[in-house]
Image (spheres, rainbow, N blue to C red):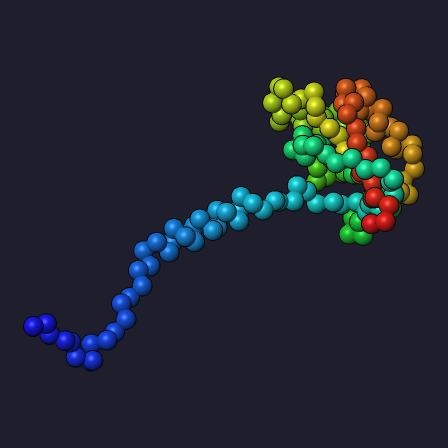
Length: 155
């Protein structure tokens, strides 16, 4: 006959935690791969003008951004309130655009260089003279795919 155990030995079995570090690592890797990092800090004030027609960028990784506007409050003590050009994370002049475009093209593969897009983020209060100078310099460097960033009407 079979023996029955007494009620004194009713402890729960322990939970196996051997795979817990693997699960935590997989979750961490998932969140790292699915999140996006900011490409750069905007150091100029930009109030985008309104647009009635908006097209979406197909490949943001092939886009280089040029911000034009007055410096933020923390930079106004050094630079004043005139409109400035921001390339990546520093203030530059119109003549530095050629080097900027060349360095951006160097980072791309050979087949993606012709479809590189330059996105201009220009404050609505900026004089058109500086925008015209930037566009002329982009033409000299053969960066002819230019997109203007704007707010959609109603946003």
